Amino acid sequence: MRLMLIALMLTAAPLAAQPMMTAAAPAASGYVADRPPLALMRLLPPPPEAGSTDEQADKFLYRQSKRGIGGPLWQSAIGQLSVTSPSFVKTVSCALGATLTPQTTPATLMLLRRAGTDLGRAVFLAKDYYKRPRPFSTDRGKACDPDAAKDGGKALGFAYPSGHAAVGWLWGLILSDARPERSAALLKFGKATGDLRIACRVHWASDVTGGRLMATALYQQIADAADYKADLLKAKSELSLAPVPEGCPAD
Image (tube, rainbow, N blue to C red; front, side, top):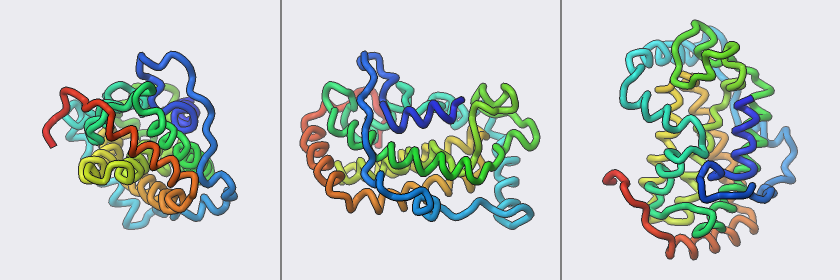
């Protein structure tokens, strides 16, 4: 299932799709692994209730997104279906102003990997609890992810909260700690990661908002951890020497 694949991306090797990575990354413990499941669930409000104003807004935005099928945002979303895709990695590197590779930035990747362990546990616990259907399952509407058209989109798993939105926002926050001078570009990247899921028509807008809320609440807990602060210092040091990515759009 795609849901399980993204879980492995978060907890094992965020950049495993890069050709230079020849072996699986080591397992990483999270920064707040001692937090019980209920504490993680409390980081996130429930999705909109049936018939509520918020649900109506979700449905309206989903209908409006039909206008973007095949457009620029649709194409960008296709390039970032996987958070380990070369396109996604390049986008993160451009926002960071440093090329992320296992060879040159291992401490930074471990920082993301450990935070991803915490995030994966929280996101997938919430998805399984709320079991919210994806928007395309309500009307068989077209989505940019080909898995949406297979077996009712079962491989994509449940909708709430958006894992992509949570990953993008959490990485934006963490990398902003590592490179504060790039925070504007990194937070722009983090927001765009979620927005593209709406353009792809695989998430309701409130799924994306929920992903960002969970990422923000989790980040606030992670940022207080002694291990995080120690890993952050290592990441800052290596990023100051990391090569600048080429072919990036102007900020």
